[in-house]
Image (cartoon, rainbow, N blue to C red; front, side, top):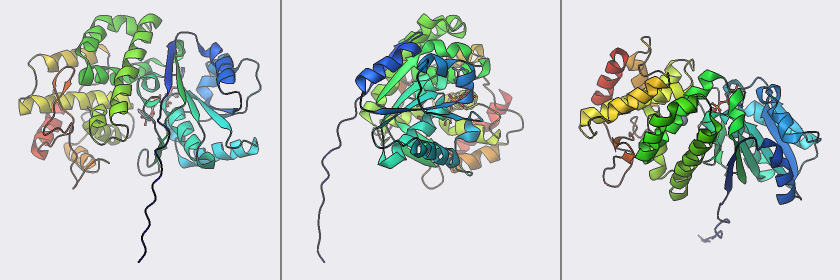
Length: 367
Ligand SMILES: NC(=O)c1ccc[n+]([C@@H]2O[C@H](COP(=O)([O-])OP(=O)(O)OC[C@H]3O[C@@H](n4cnc5c(N)ncnc54)[C@H](O)[C@@H]3O)[C@@H](O)[C@H]2O)c1
Ligand SMILES: [Zn+2]
């Protein structure tokens, strides 16, 4: 037998800028035209961004081909929409010299990023996130994908953006429930990485809820810094990146068991409380941490107990099916103090006995 070894030289280092400001939508296009003069732009957005006037602010009178996703939201985040997007790009005679511009929340960013990753084997994408989820989380880490009829993000690719533009003024038109639920990811960032940031969130929660743009710029910056540092250290989620899943193991199970009636951030809020209860049972948690976290989530008016109708056995079954489970049981990310993730043998996700998790799921309904 003959043997050959092919060494592919490292792909160019991934490096991208995140630009944060207020009322900046109108200045993005001239900048894209000057920085990417040879690329043909194609916009992917959804119907709510059009009706809120954000698409108009972005492109003004320019004639740019666009795909407007309708209906907006998770219901369209599937492979059929990606096929329609790609066919629209082909009909517009676009080739590999295309720059995809994603304007919208996490669903638009995930679909547009994935379409960019697979269109003609990959074209660059610029992300313009417009929700609290997308500005804190989904636009930054390079994960893209769409759901199958069986599970979330079943199709996916790592496809890092060429650039991210965050205009915090776009958040002023976001629905209140979506706005608050998305802030749970911000609180998660503070819990896993930065106690001063948590203090800041406690002190400024009222201004954040008033959508004060100065404060929103600060939190957008801090979120991107925290997520960006973790992604830089572990882009493909071998170990450290797992910390971003804090609250998500139970959170994802609660989200699915609710039939997606709970928003992702609302389910993660319950998952963060569950993680706190596990930490208390294992005796690894600083005394007043749990109460501080619970207080801020309650002030945010997101759920902190699981709905009565969620059966612990259903939740346990879903936890066993977690995509990161090995031998039908996932590891958990836990914290010791605010700002510090608990590690064991250098691992950021650790084993927790199923009995402990089960007792927490029961307590979650009563607390
Ligand atoms: N790729 C990642 O790393 C990552 C991380 C977190 C979440 N996600 C994904 O993100 C998705 C959730 O994102 P989302 O919460 O932004 O959902 P979304 O994109 O569905 O947006 C929520 C709703 O708000 C509307 N909207 C968006 N911006 C608006 C604005 N400025 N004004 C008025 N309405 C606006 C949308 O049309 C939609 O109806 C999920 O699919 C999740 O899996 C991905
Ligand atoms: Zn999340």
